[in-house]
Length: 94
Image (tube, rainbow, N blue to C red):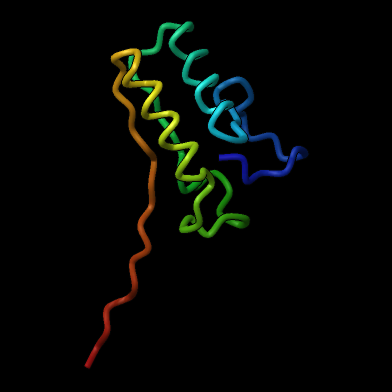
């Protein structure tokens, strides 16, 4: 969910954990477990927080990072969800 440049302050500091690779994804989930969360939420396709930067259809997490989050969350008996957007083509008129 880090599509925003550093100069754009959108009030998310401290609310999100950025991960680079599966090992950081596992570490992020472990931190959340330590903080006492009941759910883990991921942002595999980014978010509407940066409409001018992200087309909302490209992945912001690798499959390996997503899998690591899921595996670690389930290891701690936590539920996990993803904030995902799907590409919808406009209807085809005949």
